[in-house]
Image (cartoon, rainbow, N blue to C red; front, side):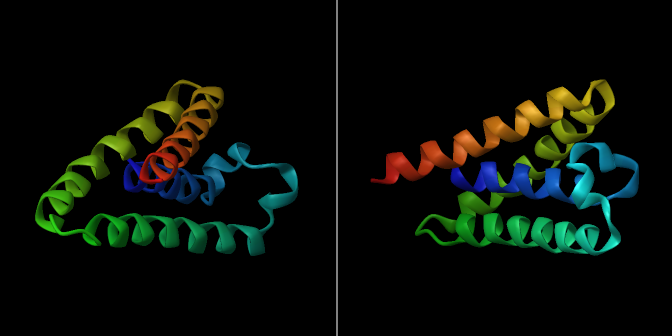
Amino acid sequence: MIFAGLLYLGLFVLAASMSRHAQLVPVQWRAAKHGNRLRSAGWLLVVASLMLALWSADWPMRLLAWIGLAPIAGGIVALGLTYGIRWARIAALLALLLVFAGLVSRG
């Protein structure tokens, strides 16, 4: 659950770092220096989700799950951006809740 939420958040932040999707982030973050930071943060979240997926005894199955979730998460981000910014933001909040639920369930 945690790596799925981190993967979605990483892809969301990568999309938000692009100039065409700048309306996802607050006005103060739309400067070029923040775009670079958002891009770096997005890649860090994606890599963190992959590392978290591989940090397990059953890492081959989790790697397969991560590879399967990557296009699904990307598709959800793309559809959210296509149909409305509000949907993309709501999905990002749901991804945060998914990460939080995964952390709580681990104890």
